[in-house]
Image (cartoon, rainbow, N blue to C red; front, top):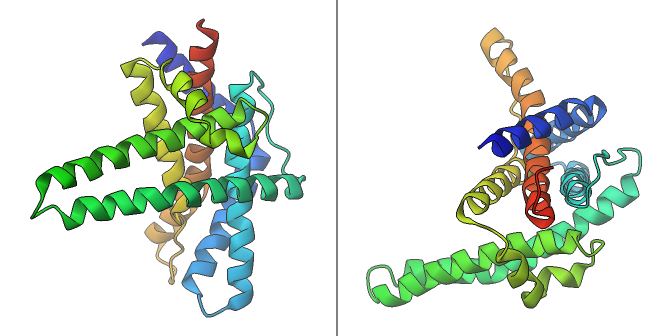
Length: 231
């Protein structure tokens, strides 16, 4: 429990120490929100794709650096590197989403008919999603090599390191970070209502803060397991 609290404190401190990163990620999320609200603007949609890649790339490097024992922050000014990592992360997510979508459909279609097939679909969905998480982490342990995200032997060896508590902590942190990465968080009021304005500004800073903290928290817990000693 002490290590768990310590990792949370470490993750929060790490996120707060990167004020520039929080501001930039906040701005990118704001751009994403505006682009989403103006879907007819083609130029905005092109910019939206780039902003999402930068956000995903930044978060990916936070976990990557942490997992490999570094307290370094990703370099915001190296956009090419962030975009490329974001692209690889997006491609990885897309590839895994294919079987995930199929298994969800399999479970839903057979829900009122063949309950056994429905249960099998749910089980396969969970297992594939866990492979997605472990595969993403395994890639960080191999210098970001894309194919290592699909190395089933390595994924299995990594998964065997987890006990139930560590498993729950890491999966929870991954889900939280994915929610902030995929969902458009920042919503701006159309009027000048003070409550809405405060709400928008609060979310503007809280979304990237929780996103960066969650990514750091994932790396800390997996690093702790790999070292088999407190960090």
